[in-house]
Image (cartoon, rainbow, N blue to C red; front, side, top):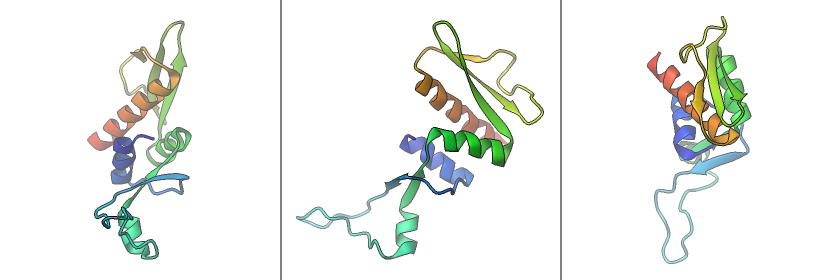
Length: 121
């Protein structure tokens, strides 16, 4: 998960265990370059960590927390995505949003749209 989306998810309340994370470094020790964050101080460490979930976790989290489902549809030469709510109403118009790119890029665009929808609520 890219940093900007991981940060947005944290702001929305995402707090599930993840294999990956970003660590915000505030100071460096010269000249060794070691991070000054005390790794044993869990409060300091927690404030400086942003969890980086896998895409599957994010899609599941949106389904469970906000009842929003992101679907990636495969076309002949493009991928598209569709976001529906728990009543199977489309939230992105009547047609799937076309996206020319890879499957992974379509997943990321769908996650960005899910984040946008939740922020607007």
